[in-house]
Image (tube, rainbow, N blue to C red; front, side):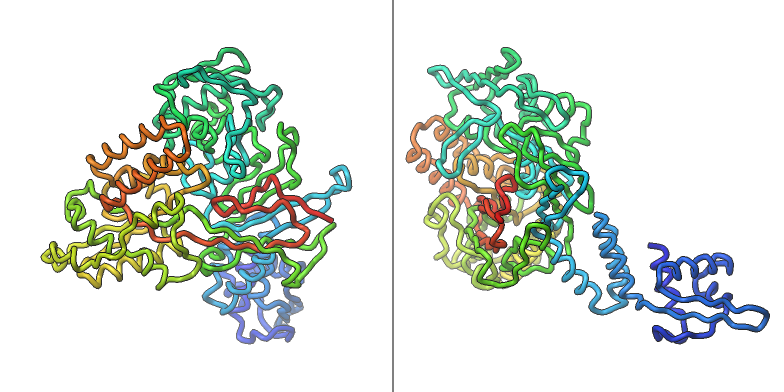
Length: 603
């Protein structure tokens, strides 16, 4: 990129910047513009001429001036260089180049973003060295941040969890259609009459991505690891007392007490099975270079992109897609409207017919059960320690009002059926409650609100700040990255946290995650009495045998949380997507993502 910078500097230093017009200039003047020796200036001009950017005709003899003709506008060169970097997979460097010049040339960043948007979707290419015609099907998406953590026990974001689902497998899998637990790495399991001792039989011939076969020792190691101090999801295996390998393909698990949700917990991505040898060898490096048994393997993971390749010997059948690329382009994510329709484009290539007709595209939509919320820290000394003040603040932070004012894709929360909407009290006027604490409203003492710097979180946080200001309550907003927000110290010091809760078809498990995940604020913000009440109900829910009974208990738990004003549900998002008519196998999951292993191309 140094040569590009030198060309832009040269153009900027010329008295006549008109393209295609020869102008007289001495080599010494060129050297002065480029801040180099005349010898280096000669070499630099020669390189630029070889690229076709300019024509340099050196003067012969004393007094004969040299002639310079520039052919390429510097902004066009920068754009061309940025595109070339993208084609090489150097997304991060390409973005840096554009950012370096975006203030100098109006429209450069917009043109770059427009071009970048055309690179996503399905791309079909040919590689001669591959058999069967060498066809390569690649699906590309853009994301707003790199995938620095893909360790199942450490992931924080839904995007990370979605990738984990494709790189790893669990012992059992939850079928969202039938709402039953089915086999995955284990093809058979049974428990004793008490429901405390469980035996799992593993499939033979299952390979990890580094070529070694799965054994019972890997399962034991993985379950023990998910219960360890480094795990952010210890709640998934909290009911396990011990785990033992009976032989290479048989595992015995003993629970602390009967747990009707145990199998569902084993289906969570956080309980994925990892290779013991590789995980121990890699240590902290396992987060960014994981190996599992899943349908895709990680072949690249850096600040530019995450690349997944189909795992040929996958035990459940090789995916149709050859590659999945997730490019890190934060400015595209930040520039998107909250209600923008997500497009799964198809880039024309071998075997793919281009289409621009709106009617030919197929639409998909889903109302997310996951939801945005604000939690109120009852454990921190100060005004929020008082239940009556939390009640007033909860009345101020009306989810219905936020949705009406901010609009976008924000929809009423439908998590856990209609439990949340039925239990919420949005009719009580904030003034009626806050009058009990009038003196505090005028002290100017700020409450600390922490959240991510993502566009939707920023909008929500600013709305909360402005809304509270109307009632004399000052809010200080601090934006931190997901890793920082997951720290218990940060969660405990914050008065308010704006975050999102993961909810899918495993309703009971989703509630347990909401309650117990180390990286979420509820377990840190719920006061002691509330924790004791919730724990009693959770123990009861684990022992209940029917869905109806567990649904009633979930409702009771949510009633405790809302009654103690521990959190305020704000909204869920409606996810919409359009797909090229030749793309099939597309289905939005509970988190709004597409299962890469099911996507294929029809002729």
